Length: 145
Length: 123
Image 1 (cartoon, rainbow over the protein chains, first blue to last red):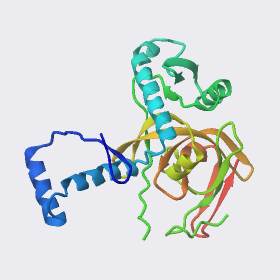
Image 2 (cartoon, chains in turn blue, red):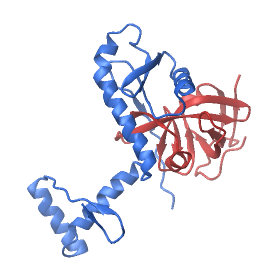
Image 3 (tube, one colour):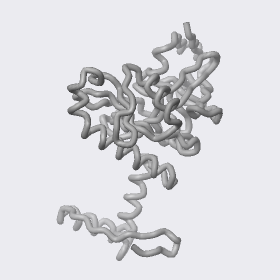
Image 4 (cartoon, rainbow over the protein chains, first blue to last red):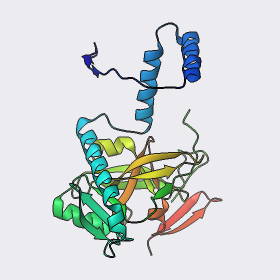
């Protein structure tokens, strides 16, 4: 790691990409941006990818998101067992610190009870089922001028 | 209520108050009624500013079939005389909110496109 002039800590990494794709990418960057600009273009692509998904740069919020990912991992590890548990199967469960702290048929009631008991904390709520939950938000909108 | 002319064509929209759970911290946002949305959507900027706690992650399909993962958050929601506690929402890069069918299906809604007006009742 090294510190950039902007004060940001920079990291060096290595990735594997298709040779043909890399040559075409290099050619495009050379034509459009000039010599030695691939790094800059890739860094901007990464930045756009993260920002489009709204992942916060706020370190505290990021910490909560990482915690939720850990709780999700714990849920996925427990899922097979929970599916075979008649008390949990088909219900929503809340995972906190790697363990199921509550389950309920009603997602809202579950959240109210858990927040009421533990405070407003990052947790992972999901339904115990064989399938994953998907939602649709299909309305296309024109971008503002 | 009249349709909002901030959209073209005009769209049914209203002011909704979103409150952070277990607090009095709240924000008012314009929300468009979106019968196509399975879930209510908040501007990501409001989620960040509000410091809502993530409570899950789900797969979201957009109009072109593209799938994205989004974090979910619980938030209390109110408009007119109706209150909806612990509504699960997702964030998106937009300025207004979308009221999805998770909330709309709890109400009686009449859209009058000819008159560009709508009624929203909690029977």
